[in-house]
Length: 280
Image 1 (cartoon, rainbow, N blue to C red):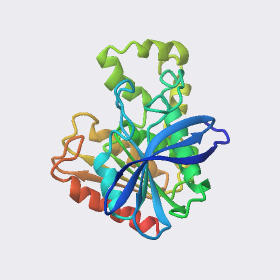
Image 2 (cartoon, rainbow, N blue to C red; image 1 turned 45 degrees about the vertical axis):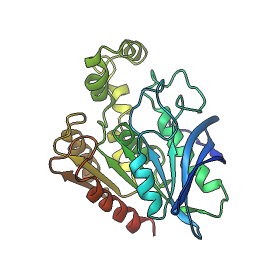
Image 3 (cartoon, rainbow, N blue to C red; image 1 turned 30 degrees about the horizontal axis):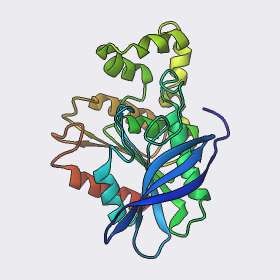
């Protein structure tokens, strides 16, 4: 993914909802030549407002609908005074198709998130402060956060990951796909080899290999009772970034599972405070 990335053409479509705090729009933008769909919440009042890009977790593209995956976060963060762009990713909702994305370890989602920040920055819209942009991902979107920080350091001003998957793609394949009998595993290994056959390739697609590139502060929040994404994955990622001298904090949430429940509001207070400090 080391290339010159593009992101532009942010277009607001129809109004999906309007309330006293914000207006919700259907949007599209361009990322490396593909049209990517999503939703955007724009707060009421006089901007420009700091912006956040939301990177959702895995949802089968065949059933996914635009804006799905982080509705609580979209609402909460817009009410806190952020322009919120939730990217659908390629192959989802109204986005263009990329038939090679799954076999390519879904690295295209990182390109879509890089393109989202560039599209916000280049939009020229008076509501958007293109100099204050944060990134927030959960589950699979947490790995998209890690990838983005090492592929495009300095593009975002701060990043948060909730309950992220592993920063090692082979662990995600073993945990989620191989254990489920997904035939895509054979295609991936035919193209790239197994970690035993080509360890250099698999090291090269882990963001931990490039931890020294990160320039943004990173907050990871992970429940101790998460039975979907083991907390150990976040401990390893935080240790790797920390050992590289990066500004990283791992916050463990006692008793919480993969989708934060009773402690969600309190953890979002932490997330909001983190962005408030770094998007001044």
